[in-house]
Image (tube, rainbow, N blue to C red; front, top):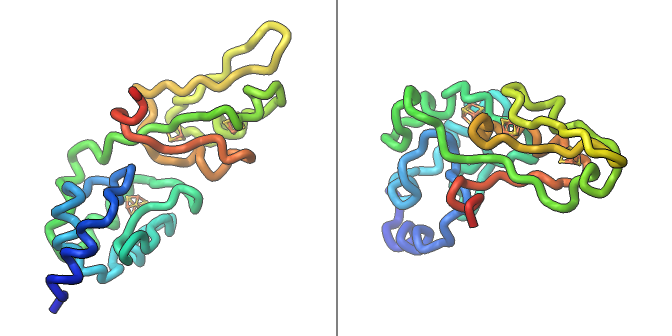
Amino acid sequence: MFDRGRRNLLSRRRTPALPRMPWIVDEDTFVDNCTRCNKCLSACETEIIVKGDGGFPTVDFNRGECTFCTLCAQACPESLFRPTTESAWDVKAQVNQQCLAQNNVECRSCGDMCEVQAIRFKLQAGGVAQPAFELDICNGCGACVATCPTSAITMVTSQQEEK
Ligand code: SF4
Ligand code: SF4
Ligand code: SF4
C-alpha cells in the first residue's frame, strides 16, 4: 500500500518541463497513480526510461531516442497512458547557440539522425550550412539530442517553443 502522505509530498514536486513518457495522461494523475513498479523501464526497447524525481519514470533523451514502439504503454498495469492511436506528445527539438554550425564549424550530425527529415541544412554564403528545425515535421523522437557533439539540442513543448 502506497503511503498517501508521501504520495502527496511527491505530487507537490516540480512539474517536469516535458511529458514523462509518450501518451501519458496528465502529470497529476500520473504521480497519483503510478506505483513505480518499473515495468515501463524494463519494457522500453531503447532503454531511455529512467527513474526521475521521486523515483517516477521519465524519458532521458541523452540515452537515445523514442521509437514510439508503445511497449511502455502496453507494460503499464495502471490506466496512465492514453490510447496509442492518439498523438504521442507535443514535444519538439530546439537548437541553441552551442551549435557548431552556428559557430562556423561544419557539422550535420543531427540531420543524419533525423528519420523524418525535420532538420534541413541551409547553405550560407561564406559560411557553413545552418540547421533549420521544421517543427511541423519533428515528432519529438529525440534522436538528434544524444548525437549532437556540443549538447546544443534540447526537447521542449510547443508552448515552451513559442516563448
Ligand atoms: S514508446 Fe517505446 S521507445 Fe518510446 S519510451 Fe515507450 S517503450 Fe521507450
Ligand atoms: S549536431 Fe549539434 S552542433 Fe551539429 S549541426 Fe546539429 S545542432 Fe549543430
Ligand atoms: S526530435 Fe526526432 S524528429 Fe525531431 S528533429 Fe530531432 S531527430 Fe528529427
